[in-house]
Image (cartoon, rainbow, N blue to C red):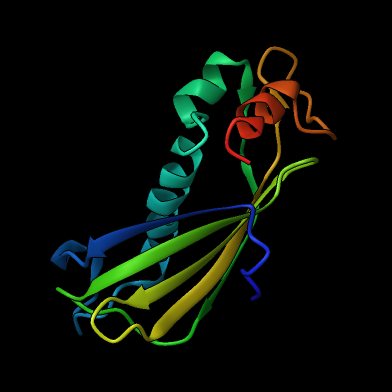
Length: 141
């Protein structure tokens, strides 16, 4: 995953809580989607287009594709850093992610999500990102 050509980057740190772990104190695989969500929200806030602003603009942005590659396990009390990289925005939002162990900087997980704009009133998927997204991004890119 090459993140050198990312358009915008965000990073969040999370301490793994007990309730995210299985009986062996390893993070259950389904919880990684929540960690991606925290980093994605931070990235969206960088250009003032978080989920509240999306809804106010008349669009929903459902995730239509998500891929996760688990390289190593995260464990209870471990501090992780989730980095999110905006890669595409003209027809869809494609965001790459890398999860690192904070103490060692070891890469634990890599992933990406793809979101598309859906006009809320009609329910129609947009094949080009709406002008509001372009306006928001123009302020930071």
